[in-house]
Length: 378
Image (tube, one colour):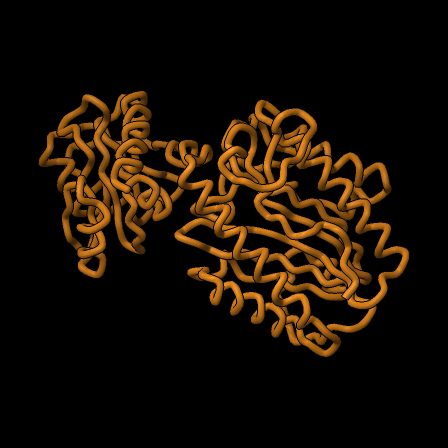
């Protein structure tokens, strides 16, 4: 899809020009992929400013392992095949008469910066900030379609694995079942390390699955997702093994109500902190404020955790076509926990997704992870 990537680069070039720089050196792998279409563990892009020296689509550097893929996927880019991509592009900066070049300071290590500065003779390196990540927040129709596919795989995997959950199955085995089924359904890989937390382990939000066998009376939290064509799903469901106890139903219903409130609040123009508060205030009012201490959600896309961050200390406003998670939880040490998480598309982008609407205005957001949010007793 060279046209899509060319349009993205054009938007990025405007940001480079606003920095009064000749070019930006893009080194973050997700950002390189976003701007070029190349999925690589070793690639960098020298993107000139709009109207700057050597203006054009940019110079892409990668090594021989990705040469054929780069020629196939990036036909409109100038290509250089070098093992040390950043140093190769540093030389290109000098040859092209550049004087001021932005770089991704949040991604480049001190050691790499030193090597760049030594190789980019006569060039001033200036931090570019999170300019490409800011562009990536708002998704186009193609991206929303890929996210929706990742979420469909995730939901179907859970539907297929639920009948296999039984006493004696270990957390590790259940995580493996989910990962295996996602692969069978077309996932390139899990979006992140699958979390299965049963019984008292459910009080640990990011518990690593272990050899604990599932037992009747457990709440079981499963936090997992498929990565499809580079885009990441992220869904959490909590189920009961056997008839749930009263306290388990109580915290489940509380988290479900908080999650509905957070989803409904995720509208274009909403302050990040207000969306967080819509869910958090319900949990705090019920006396469980101390049992919900992580943020309410985050963006998803080429990374499973990307901008924006929705939390009690976050600043900024939601925009149309931004995919975010909403994932409140209540975690009771020594007893267990509940988390419910969905991926939703804010605002007008919902029209591309074809899934459930949330909110009372037309349409506030659309949920891509459509697995039931009712408490299932297995």
